[in-house]
Length: 358
Image (cartoon, rainbow, N blue to C red; front, side, top):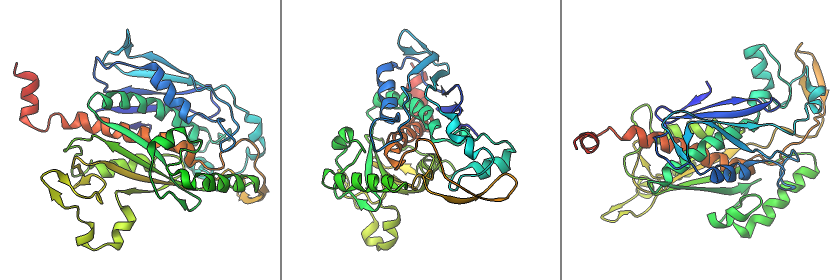
């Protein structure tokens, strides 16, 4: 499936080494101001080649809006955006044409579809997330009009954890680090792995502020369940935590419950979600990314004939995919919240009456 969402939907298309990739965003209400400079700035945050901590592949990732807008506003029809690829080096993948790279989707895609697009992983490549960021930027523009803001940053790299979460610092950090005190150690861990032709994993913390009470559609479209689905659908994501997540299993009920006061909740172990519905507190999500599977070491594998092989990877790859995963997590959270806000509009008669009884 290549479409995400119910009322506010994102459909993406394209491959890593194809001519272009892009998306179609549907369900956007008419009259939303479309800030193209903001959309491009979001793609600039995700684009490769910005520092020695990322892949050396250089892509401008210039986005073009092909439909769904007129004179700077959404028309209520599908918004289509395209990003043309400009710096592919498909020859770097000639040596893996008939074999499977460990840790990648090559093996499963081949056995499912019977076709081997060896050029950077084809549709399974993390390059596809550029389309998600483009779509997520439209969602962010819509959410901003109702006071919802989303931020993210790296809270852990190679086991080195942030002790404080400064989202303003993350905006100016090369690796979107949330804690300036451990940023240097995190950077050194990434470069150490890179110099050894290896890679490291990381954890992205994503927070949404200004979320109203009531978002989420129990029982089978719960806010936390769909957020987990959205984050797990990002390339290299292996685990997702809402609120305290795994740590909550180590607490007593008396410690984990969030006391309610006339002014709101006095703690937020729940991550802003109760019963699959937002409770008005901050939405807190952690997404755990595995080490980038593209490493420059000799590895054992098999070819398409199931014969044992050894190979060494070529090309340009991120030593820590979690870095550029930060803005992708924001995009996916924005898409979920945009979808949930639209779905929530008709849940009370007063909502319908406020629109139609005039």
